[in-house]
Length: 229
Image (cartoon, rainbow, N blue to C red; front, side):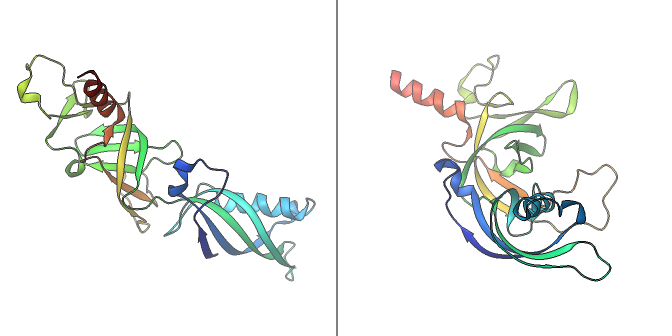
C-alpha cells in the first residue's frame, strides 16, 4: 500500500468539516478472493478495499472513513495454486487527520483526575490533559466513583458565595470546543498490562486553555450577558 497524494477538498463534506478530512490517493496490490469473482469487478474490489481499510488507522495518514472512488485497476493475475486474482488498484480514501492548531467540537466521553477524554462519535481517542485545561481548574470527585468526577474552571469563583453552584463546570451535557495540540501514531506495544486501556493507533491531544474554547455554553452565556448590558 502506497499513499500517492493528498487532496484538500471534496464536495460531499460540509465546509466546516473539510479541514480535518482529506482525500488520499492510494496505490495497493490487492488480492481478490475467489468468492467475490462472480461480482462486477469494480464492486468486488470496493468490497475488499472496505474490508481492508475502513475504520483502520494508517500511520501518518489518519483514520480511514470511506472509499471515495476507484481511479484505476490493473492486472488480474492468478498465481499457480491460488484461485484468487491479484490487481494493482489506485483509489481514493476519505481519511480523518486534523492538523495541529485546528479547532474542533466534540462531546465529553470521560472525566477523571488525569483530564478529559472526548469523542467525535467515529473517533474516541481525544485527550485534554490537566496542563491544557483552563487555569485555574480543579477536579471534583464523584462520591459514588472516585475514578470519575468533573472539572471546574475557577475563573472569578473567589468573588462568589461558596455555597453557590460553580458556573464553569465541564460535564457531559455540553459540546466542547478544543484546539488540536498534537496528533501521534504510537508504536504497537509488544506487551500490555492486563488492566491497561486498549491500544490506540492514533491519539489526539487537545487544549481548551484559551478564550473561546471549552464547553460551548460558557461563551454563549457570556455573549448573552454582553448583549443585555
